[in-house]
Amino acid sequence: MKKTSHFKKIIILITLLLLSCLLLVKCNIPDNERDQISIKKLNLKYVKEIDPDFFIESIRVNSNDKRLGNQVELKSADYGWMLDLLLENKKEIYNERKPNTYKVKLTFMEYGWTFEHDTSPYDGKQSTFYISQKLQKQFIQQYLASYPRNIILTKKKYNWDENIEGKITIAKYTSLDQGLILAISGNDVGDDSEFPIKIADLFPENTKSNNEVITIPFSFKLFDYRKKLRDSNQVYIELISTDGTLVYVDDKIHLRTK
Image 1: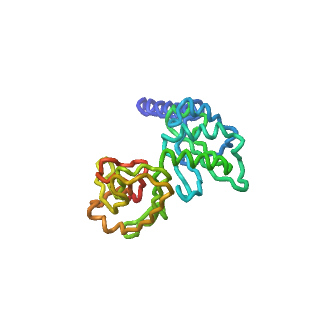
Image 2: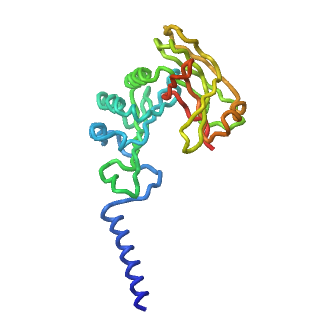
Image 3: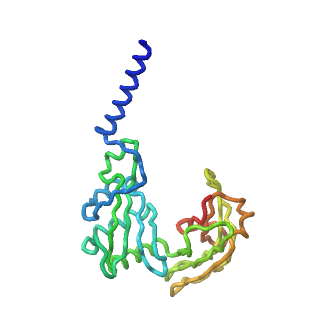
């Protein structure tokens, strides 16, 4: 009886501890759902100065530009300049859609069963807002300065038996002296090694910079490369230099995950 009574006391103590965690410390379970918060209520300066990587999970911009495609998802290295654009152009940001505006979705991290989220007032939040055409043009200019070469696919995900279709866009005055190759690569989960396979030569070495925007459509059968890719769990399409030493990682696009 004493052992049973002691066991019950332990269960009660554990239950009280969990309730204290939930009610007093406010820890939560990630549910991958985001509560909406107005862009006007966000302290973006605070987010930028503390650590954008800690706060932000993703930023997606509907650019609707032929050089970038319909939507761009920023990399963490871009959060700083994107936040600067938003801070410097507050009058060009709207809570609701208006004519000639472009949708932006800012999603914050959701840390869940940790104490870290207590330092983030935006844990598990998401803000959907719209930017003016003027700000959209500034965004595109900044993005192309960082990523002058882009791959735009007709779909986000493909199966092995499908054709991969899309286009490559190259902004004005982009350096092409190292040449450019369209390639495909793959690796397995937990394996960082990659083995790029050439799909097409786009430009030879010593090519002069372009004076106009270049658009190159492409199409190939993914199945034709399946054996060479060794049934990789992850498949990517990328742009590399002619000699293979320069990989434009920023242009790497995830094609397929099993």
